[in-house]
Length: 294
Image: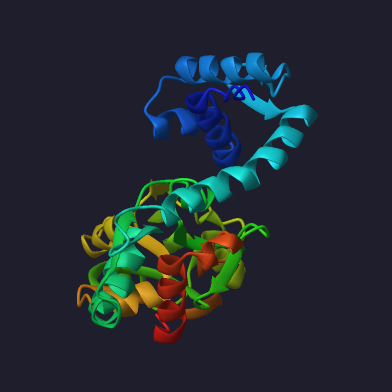
């Protein structure tokens, strides 16, 4: 029987990552390609299957109906292939977990407890990834992730790890200058520090003050919670963050402006593909994380 011709695997990888990340540019960056090189790989796959998988308009790539059907048909088999390869690995004495973690959660909550996990499961080793698009890469370059989200994708197995309150965090000197009385004029003179992926926290805090129309002098955006805390401690602005971040930082330079308790739209979640729970490293970490109550 003649062997079947395999699809171009690198082209298939480019296709799957573009779909999962929702962005050709993000997929190209993750693989280490130029956008044009990624587009050529996808074109090769389209030639192989004889179907148009994406529509292309400027920088945007959208799945066609045939592309969506192709993804749904191929994706389960690729996950099965990955599990099969893992099960045949010669390195069976070592359990390896590819975990995506936000840096602030890692430093404040995960790493102080990882020693417990190592003692319980000495063969479990974790590759830590703090890069972007963690949720989108689960099932691809990541086995699981701990994300801060309003609600993970419904196709993922998700465990909510906490409920949070939004606080305005700043240096004690800045808090004294602003005063203890809620004053919109005083607030509009300030610089606010906002995380790129958590804009709704600021809206929730303003609404709780009855100041939805508040227009601060500047908003500085960050992609790191750790740097936001340090910027706030240095008096560079008012950081809109979670009460848990302030408490765990235990930084004597920082204080909570006004002491308001505002429910956060965001929570930390553990997420993985439902089928990933069949993998021993994922199951061990998942069960420990739930029991540990991080």
